[in-house]
Figure 1 (tube, rainbow, N blue to C red):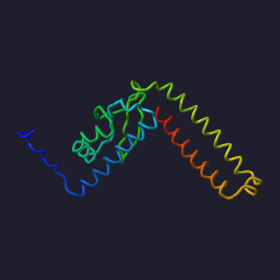
Figure 2: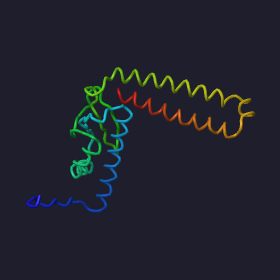
Figure 3: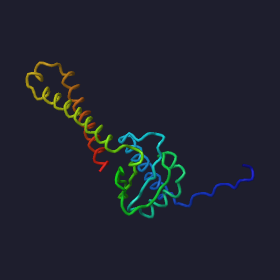
Length: 171
C-alpha cells in the first residue's frame, strides 16, 4: 500500500462531470429496476450489453467502470450491434441497454409467473372498478373508504404496468 501509486484524477470539466454522473445514476437505476422487475437473483452477475453509445456515455462508463460494475452487480460491459434472445432491455438517454438473462433465468417459467401475476392484478382491478362504478357504493360508503379504493386502484394499475413492461422485456 505504501509503495502504491496515487490514483490519477479524472480529466473532466465540471459541467460534463455532472452530466456524466447523472447519466451513471440513471443507468444504475435502470439496471437495478430491470433486475428487480425480472427477479434476477442477487448472486447473478450478467454482462451489460450497450447499443447506440455516445462518446459522453463511453467516457462516463470508462471513468466509473469499477463503481458501475459493483453498484449494478455486473460481470462486465460490452458494446453490441444486436441483443441476444432472452435479453431484458431498457433505454437511457438514447442508449439501449440489454441484460442477457437466458442463462440466468428460466424465461418460460418467468413469463408464466408474470402472466399469472398479471391475471391476478387484472382481476383485482376489475373488482375495485366495479365497486367504484357502482353509484350505490359511492353514495353509501364513507369518503375515506372510497378514497382508499381509489388509491388501491391506482396502485394496482401501476403494478399492472410494471408487470406488463417486465413481460415485454422478455421479448
